[in-house]
Image 1 (tube, one colour):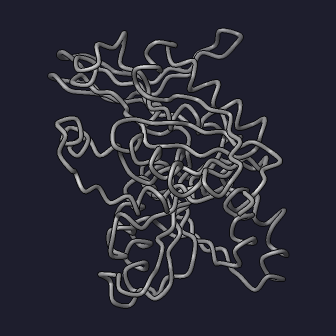
Image 2 (cartoon, helix red, strand yellow):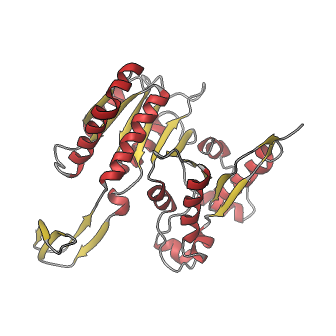
Image 3 (cartoon, one colour):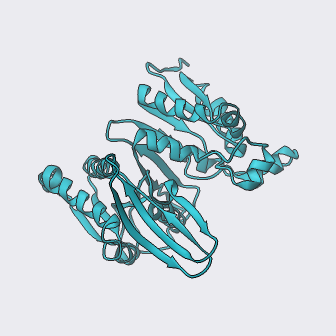
Length: 335
């Protein structure tokens, strides 16, 4: 049988632990026997990221801009224990965070609905797609431990040297503080990716924040979405017969639980991280979840919607059969 020809390479981002093992199995058994596979390969395993001072992660993201499509295995984001285990130079940042920031994309995650795997929420009849903003918030936050009494302020210093100050808290004892940020152009890209994806898939789009409490941060998200929708997408949505709907995040959660599904739920970075796991688990299996990063420029990165399966990898190293469910890996990276 003649193999399927590829005219344009795709970017291949290898990963860590069991996902690295499974990806090789998938290529050897399901891809290379049938496809004349052409890839631009990048090793994002933790050892090589450490060896290159994480430059390989940046290079892989830039290669995705060049070729337009990438497939990424799950990777380790090191904590203190991993720094010791792998003898790392430093606690390297999340590869996903780095890649998402460079591509300025939105992560769309949707459950794979099949007979025999039924949702735990009985009224869910159609997939619920989570659109997760892939920049900023807690994932780009700066943190500080407060040792004792004192004043903590938020300070912005303009290019001309003028300062704007906002009191965070007058500490009377020890505590912690965290500073988050986001970028208006990134929020705009997020909004456009969501609106375009809704039009492409002919699904209603929901968006939710907590603007009643976060009157500047979250409210900016709300305002940018509404301004772009009114100016660029309102007529297109009407022609397609779909709707854009904004509500508070807690109201959205309540509505989601009572809905039948079949829409896109846009979330800020942290909300999307949490809700995508909730949705995938409630649809019956964490194994059956697709994940794709879509940028407004048309770059696509298909990524694994799971971790590196550390516990199974340690069994594999001992020569045991970990019986890892490769189905989740296969579907999580399906182009």
